[in-house]
Amino acid sequence: MRWQVALVGGVALGASGCVVAKEGTWTFDGDIRRVVVELGNGDAEIVPSGTSKTHVELDFGGVSLSPVGPYRSGNAVYVNLLCDGVCGGDVFVEVPDDVWVEAHVHRGDLDIDGLYGGELDAIVGAGDLTITDTSVPRVGTSVGAGDGSIELDEVGCVSVQVGAGDASLDVPAGAYKLGVSVDAGHLEVDGGIVQDDRAERCIRGHVQAGHLDISSY
Image (tube, rainbow, N blue to C red; front, side, top):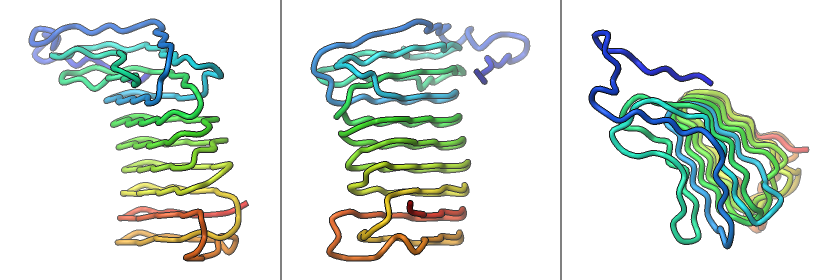
């Protein structure tokens, strides 16, 4: 875990906020269709639960003026770990198949492995994004400053946005609708990816000042 509670003038910031301590496991059952994870500072890991349940395990703390933590609203589970003070920690989430997963880590690493079905949006501001063994029809990813490694077993439509970092996208070979662009960065697409405007699958990519390598297997 990589977080610290800062001291100002020798006094903890808790003087102007509430001390946050979220440790333990939460379980949400029933018809979950969407899981949203937002983490300000720390590392997050998301994997399949293998059941209809969503499990959230936290080791998180610090100071915040507003409440943080997991909760359910309707058919969605929200893991709100974005403080308006100084806090951070680690979160481990197990999700059912065929749900829409949205994960945003502002500072830290995001690891996603083995998700199936549904939709996936994964954003890392400053840190590393790793997606492996995933079969999700629609995948949207963004890496600001850091490294991204995205490996998809099945592809419907995938988009990759790269700021100042480096990212790689590994997908099955074949025909895709390609929509890629570069500002001041660099983009490579290997020969196993064939441009075809009639293809059912699509790849979209945009590079600002970093590097994106799109490869096939």
